[in-house]
Each structure stands twice: as C-alpha cells, then as structure tokens.
Amino acid sequence: MSTLAALLPAVIGWAVHALWLHGRLTTARRDPLTGLWTRDAFTRRARRLLRDRRAVVVLADVDHFKQVNDTHGHAAGDALLAATAARLAHAVGNGGTVGRLGGDEFAAVFIDRDHTAPERLDTLARVLARPVDGAPQVHTTVSLGWVRAADHHGEELPGLLRRADEAMYAAKRSSSSVRRARIGRLLASVAGRRPGRRGAA
Image 1 (cartoon, rainbow, N blue to C red):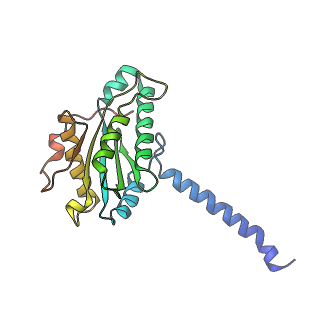
Image 2 (cartoon, rainbow, N blue to C red):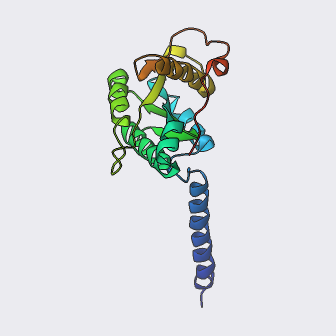
Image 3 (cartoon, helix red, strand yellow):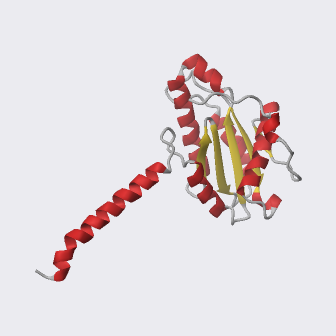
C-alpha cells in the first residue's frame, strides 16, 4: 500500500471534521428563532460593508410587540419576529447583511448602488406591516431608522447605529414608520429618551 493510500482515511476524516466544525460555528452565529446573524456575526459583516461609502445602516424595531404577545401568545410573537426577519433579509438581499440584536430589534446594512434608499425603505415599512402568512390577526408596524455612511465620514458602526437608533425612535413618535438620521451631532442621551422596552418573545 502506498503512503498516499495509507494517509487517505486520515485526510478524509480531517476534512469531514472540518466541515462539521464549520457547520457548528455557523450555527452558533445564527439566531435560533429567526436564522439571522447574531450581534457579533452581524457586526463583522457590517464593518466590511461600511468600507463602501454607499452603505446604508438601518435599525428596525417591532412596534407594540408586547401587546402582540399578550393578545395572541408567545407563539404568535415568535411568528411575527420570524416573518419580520425574513422580510428584512429579502429586502436587503445577498449583497447586504441583517442581524437580530436582541428581542424585537434588528439591524441591517446594505449598499445603496442606485441611490434609492428612501423609496426602498418606505416600501419595506409597508411590507413589514403586512400580517404574518397564515395568521392574518398577527401584525403590527415596524419603525425604521436609517443613516448613510457617507453623511458621517469616518464614523464607525457603533456611532452609525446610534444615529439610526435616534431616527428610529423619532419615527415611533411621528406618523411615519421611517426616519432618516439627521446630519449633525448625536444627542447626548438616546437611552434616557426611550419609551419602555416591549417584552421579547
């Protein structure tokens, strides 16, 4: 038996183990309910996308989520989160990234190649407000805040997310579901102005 033939089972075994390990790592980086990237995995991908000045950062928060849970049950709340995640991922496409930051809050980054982000996000807000497939009684709006990376040259992901967060909470207080971040300094205490958090599923 040749040396290569003798080593072949070990090589195959290592290859199978590497594939298994890769699958386990990928699973660990995915949110089990929605299938979206977890915060850390999303952050890594988002930072790469932000090298492109056309990048847009979006923060999304499900409105009245606790009320959905209280009225229809946690299974309905889970279905709403899963539907929101799937619709966000579809809207962003393969060229972007979407993550679940926790509870009913999501973040996304995509490249606005054709400069249609406002129209695209207005359409997304309407899509997100549709009832869950197969459960017409389960629906609510989703508030979106967004910011262009080019408007804040040199600002990194945490700062851009804070700006999108400010815009999102401004959207919650207004009649619009979508709000673009202001160009200028961040407000000092976003957290202090937030309404009470809605319960997670």
